[in-house]
Length: 256
Image 1 (cartoon, one colour):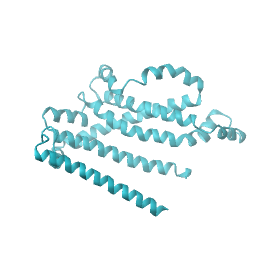
Image 2 (cartoon, one colour; image 1 turned 90 degrees about the vertical axis):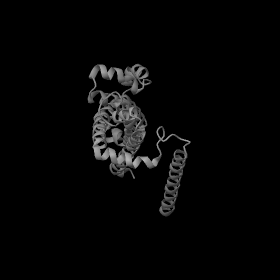
Image 3 (tube, helix red, strand yellow; image 1 turned 180 degrees about the vertical axis):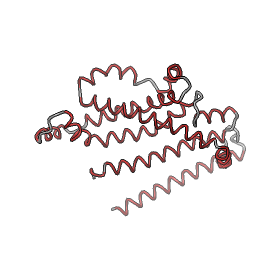
Image 4 (cartoon, one colour; image 1 turned 120 degrees about the vertical axis):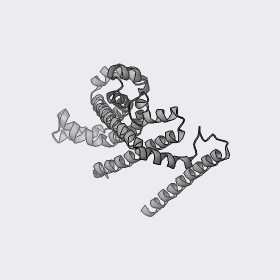
């Protein structure tokens, strides 16, 4: 059975690489033939040279450092608050009812709509970027934690009471959190990607980072540099997703 699974995964990997190669080859061919403007849609062959220039000038490393700082701070703040409030709402019907109206008003507002207030409240600072990213990941974690807690089997809570764990804290740490952990971790994993999407929006108004560097390059029609940073975001997301996936497997290995 494991051998079959390994072969299936290898087959899927090969197909995905083939699809990517075909896509890049088609893109390159259209650009080289003149059907696509090399300025408006730079071919893949232009990206390595742009990467070398950005690396040699120090712009790439500086942009990545700046964005990762905003990303980490916003992710920790938004995820922490989202998980805490989601768990609280999942545990208490009263608390859920108290914040229901607030959730219905604020949830549909996209994070990018908060940019004017971020600038007014914090100025063109890193705190403003952190605020936008935190909002971008907050609701994902909130609803993931809420659903995970509400999905805990009530029979487990009855068993906990039978074994003497009758207080809220005892049930929370002995039953609720362990049972809800997979759902909470899934929410964080989704937020990892949403956080990188929010990074660009948070930095577009001048805060140093990948978003600001992309805007600077686009104003100079250096579209190969813009594509480079788009690929950089994709790579950073893949890296954080892989690392978090391994961390999740390690933390939740007791459930296997």
